[in-house]
Image (cartoon, rainbow, N blue to C red):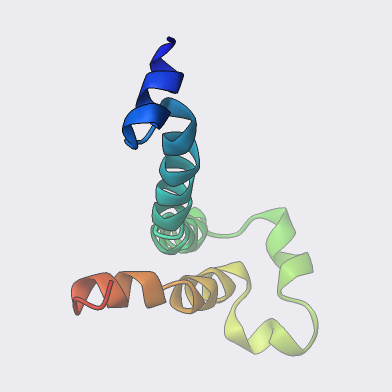
Length: 91
């Protein structure tokens, strides 16, 4: 018998059964990447100063907010619930 058949005959998890659980675990932890990524982008955008694209991004009604850095901070805030759940123990 192969290893997979033995595992199924014994009732234990096979290698085929572990892959979806591993993928689901990685997907659950992937949500933690967005908040620091957007925070770093906001910091780098704020530190970069004036670039030619800032004129395009800050035109219109959003001009008073200052361009891309506030947008990145806002996106970081919207993606922060997984971190807050982890910090306050609700995972």
